Length: 66
Image 1 (spheres, helix red, strand yellow):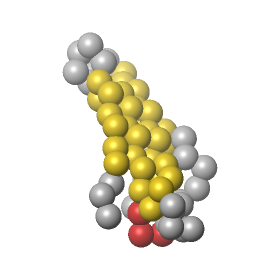
Image 2 (spheres, rainbow, N blue to C red):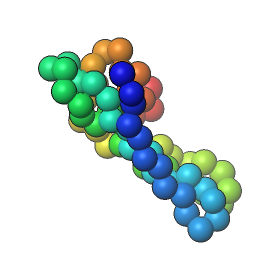
Image 3 (cartoon, rainbow, N blue to C red):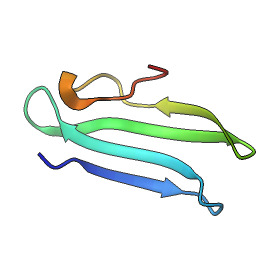
């Protein structure tokens, strides 16, 4: 199965957002990761995954801080 994804960078080429879609538990395509990335200067400070749940155990979703 092909994994669909999108990523965005800021003007300084720092990665700011990753969205990834994959197979859900009912066999449809759904959002697996909705990551928002923030920095303190040039150091990574936070990554937040805004998805609600693991949509399929084998989808390798990041989760918040896990």
